[in-house]
Length: 191
Image 1 (cartoon, one colour):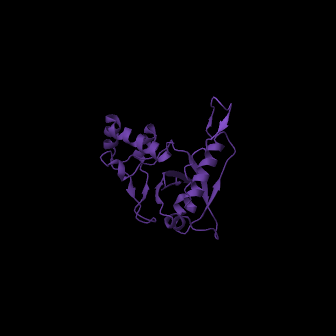
Image 2 (spheres, one colour):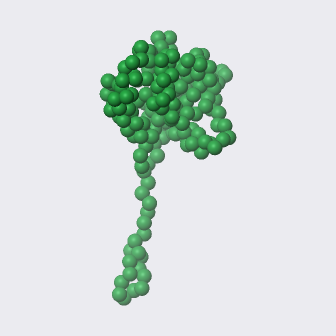
Image 3 (cartoon, one colour):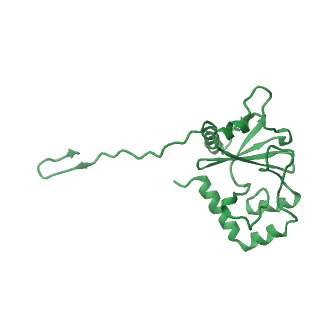
């Protein structure tokens, strides 16, 4: 089974080898800059020049000279879970994911929304947070699952998010096959 992480890596490798993407990314005045007042160095702010990155399926340009292992960009084409910052009393999101070893990065969009990308154990989940400027290390989230045609995808992404948060990694299961053979003496025999 091909995981979303592998597909994301293949897509990023394709863009890194695409001379048109490289030329357009280099023509940007600057790449996404880390937010100094946010949670860590892995939080960035979208620039007006990044709007053209949408043509490449991205929310912001990423340096085409960076190696693939340095991380993948924020995808506009990746299914994103809708969420809002929870009122007081909800568990803090960042410490919960850090505890299980997940990597967390964020992109503050020009419209004020925040895209969180959480990666762990072969899974990548992007969460779109309304009014992301007020998101902090102590913020919890309320996930919204709109009933629409993409509900199965949203449910799948939500299950991935839950599995990352709990540290659960489903085991690959092999179907149990019962071998049935026939012999000359017995019409049907199970081994």
